Length: 249
Image (cartoon, rainbow, N blue to C red):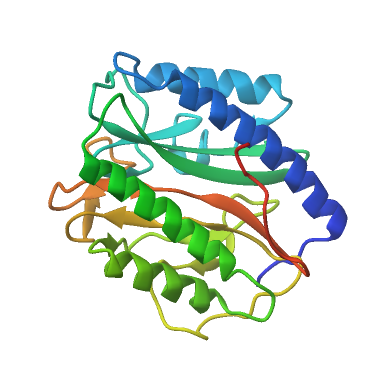
């Protein structure tokens, strides 16, 4: 069952989402050659606790950290470690926060120092895929409309969408119904209604979309070792269109 939120509940989620976006902005400033992913995680947890929130991911299904830090061919859910970022890497930072009883969730992919033009293009395309998906998150459309739009755009740019992972509803639980795929057919799935809150998160690969478990046992990476990219926002469906609750300003 998809849980519809009241305007008051969405207001709380918007407040939490704004705080989370500012935390992500601070994390982004600290990304650079030489920093470890564990140091980024420690900063994320410090900022969340200081804001009055709680880490959504820590201890969720055994995940031991606050921040997911996925580098290059790694897609999502990789555990922070003593691994140092190096020039030319790209890193996906995925973070969730529970604030006043409600979760918000977001992800961005960041270049570490200078990256080649093709990597810059991958990041641009993934970011644009999210933007296009969000435009379809209107009352009366279906979740399949979002999925289909993302797939058609990404494949039209010569990349692939991950099919084994997906976006999700969000609210009092970090993962709620529905599942929001990054591929599919128009008019498929549930109809989007006012008050629904959910996360759209295109995960894109340069090569094949098939995945395998990362060495840490929690994360996923591309089976063929190709680069991947990930962006995510928490969205509320309103009568005025899709409202991004985790917009970085």
